[in-house]
Amino acid sequence: DTAVSQTPKYLVTQMGNDKSIKCEQNLGHDTMYWYKQDSKKFLKIMFSYNNKELIINETVPNRFSPKSPDKAHLNLHINSLELGDSAVYFCASSQVSGIGQPQHFGDGTRLSIL
Amino acid sequence: DQQVKQNSPSLSVQEGRISILNCDYTNSMFDYFLWYKKYPAEGPTFLISISSIKDKNEDGRFTVFLNKSAKHLSLHIVPSQPGDSAVYFCAATYSGGSNYKLTFGKGTLLTVNP
Image 1: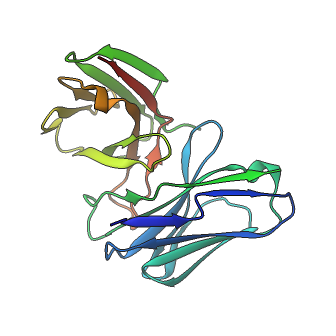
Image 2: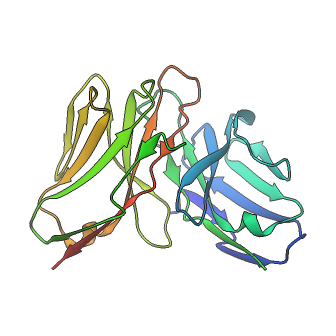
């Protein structure tokens, strides 16, 4: 049983295209996140939603738009893809009822821009 | 501006010996720290955490030590096993906020040799 699942696992596409990555969690958590791990291996928060409401929005180009249809899903849409968008994108979820609740991660989506 | 630093990109130890992974932070507001373990092609998995009100937390073979005055924490694994070979990420957050945003270090690749 996959707790946090992302699709697709790999995404290879041309510069300028628009693509989406989907994320679903079956843990009953109320908060979901998107992280980007770039070539330097840093994991950086991009967005966070709590009960479908945006609570974290880091300095991310507005070509990136998260969408949360319900608290079990957080999708990431990227417009006009650029070479610098090549990275691994991780979705995560947690129950933000207290600081002691760790985040659970999906296995990542490796995005490669040609 | 790296607020969480893991200065050793890699560490190699013999099976059965102790592994010590280090992490430094610069933001005095951080008061909760977590360690995550990551295998290739998988997402990070929560390992152990510590609140700033403690200086040690132990869970089986894993112990995390926190030195607040030095802004330093370490993860001890004893005895190390080949299955512990993975990338270990240190993460920090601030409990006073409402969203528990995690700031990650760059990770340390641990290799445990049989």
